[in-house]
Structures are given as C-alpha cells and as structure tokens.
Amino acid sequence: MTLHAASREALAAAENRLEEVLADAGADPSALGEELLSVVGLLTREIGLRRAVGDGSSEPTARTRLVRSVLEGKVSEPTLTVLDAAVGARWSSPRELVDGVESLGRSALLTSAERAGSLATVEDQLFRVARIVASEPELDRALADRTAPAEARRGLVRNLFDGKVDQVAVIMVEQLVSRLRGHGIGRGLDHLVRLAAQRRERSVAHVTAASELSEEQQDRLAERLRQIYGRPMALHVERDPSVGGGLLIRVGDEVIDGTSAGRIAALRRQLAG
Image 1 (cartoon, rainbow, N blue to C red):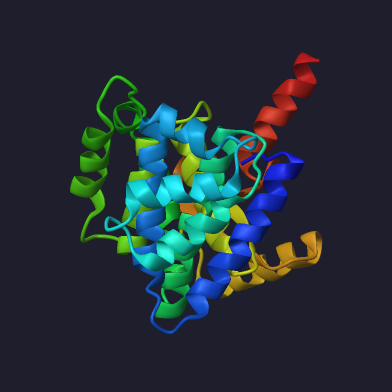
Image 2: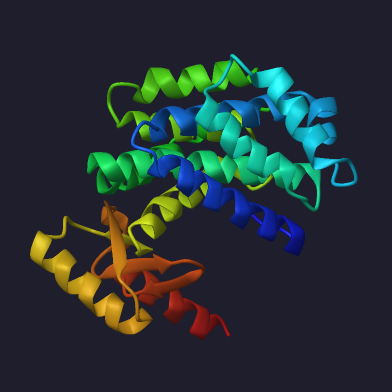
C-alpha cells in the first residue's frame, strides 16, 4: 500500500482511534475488522459514495454524517467511531481512503488473532494458502478472474478453506480476492503474510528446501538470518525436491541461493558470458 503524505497522517490518526476503540473491554476486534472490510467492499462498489466520503474539499462533519446515514444500524457503534476518524480526516484521494480503511480492518482482525493466541497460526496458514495458490495455476486464474462476480470468488475461498484454517485467515483472503488489484493474488497473499509477521515484530524469510528441516535446523537458520539482517525472522518453509541440496531463501526482494540447482545455473551463466 502506497500512501501520500496527507493519507499517511490520516491513517495514523485513524489507527490511534482504532487502538482506543479496541482498548474498550466490550469491543470485539474480529467483528470490528470484518465490518470495516465490508465497508471497503461497499466503497469499492459504490463509486459516488467513495468520491463523496473521500472528497477532502468538503466539510469533515458532512462526510461523517453521510457515512452514518448510510451505515447506522448496519454496523456497530465501535465501527462507526473508527470510520468517523477515517472519513473525517483529509486523504490524498478517495482510493487511498479505501486503502486506509482496508488497513484498519486487517489490523483489527490481526488484533483478534493476537488476543486469541493464534497469530502465529494465522501467519503460517496464510503462507500455506499462498503456496497452494502459487502451485495451482487454474486456482490462481479463478481467484484473479475479474469477469467473475466478487461473491463467486469469495465463495471459492470459503469452499476451499473454511473450517480448515482460522476464520481470521479466511476473512482476510476472501476480502483480498474480492478487491482485485493489478499486482495479482500471489503478491497480495504474500503481503498478508508480511502483515501478520510484522504484528509479531518479525520479517518473513521464505525458505525452499529439498527435504524437511528439523525444528533444530529451523532454529539455527532463524538465528543466522537474524544475525545477517539484524532483526527477528519468521521462517516459512516449503519442500521442493527439484532444488537439490542446500536452501533457497527469499527475504523481500533479496534471494540467497545456496542450492545445487542455483549453483549449476550460475555456472551456466558464467560459461555463457
């Protein structure tokens, strides 16, 4: 998510309000997050409403009144309180307002997982979903099919993963496929993994190995990567016999290729050069 300066300030203010609302013992972060993401869907569909509430030249009170007139009785008061802060702020564009509300909804959902003690599980499950989609081109195409109704894509996610992964993960993936962007489903899923890892104050290292890594091996690798990058690492390991010996590690855009396949490819490039 890329935000201009005004939008970054608006999001920071809305995040503070979200934290205040979630500090209330009666607030349900899961319900709040789901409702905020439902508002994202509404604003994505209704262009006129999106433009009206994202119009920084109008009076903030007029924008908050409009949102309440549309949503009162349909979402909870905690959700409306967070939206008051969001739409009452000045955003660089209506699209960035929607991106900001999306960020708030995801944050609330991850807070619910954190409180339930399932944040690490949600992170790992999002990674597994990402790998499943990456390994199934037909599924990737179906989830990214802009000609299919959003509800059909959401239904496909529910059919595949509901009851098999944490509900927070299901909701986040459903919302992702319902609001398609140019960067594709795979990158969107990777972003969700990073969000969960960041909530755990970790960066993500994607590790591909020819065989399973023991817990001790994973611990040693995580410590080595922590020393290299200067921050804790969340390892997401997948098995792929085609890599041969060694490990293929990706941290952000950086790739550490210690596999025999990688070394052979490097040698071929040197010979060809």
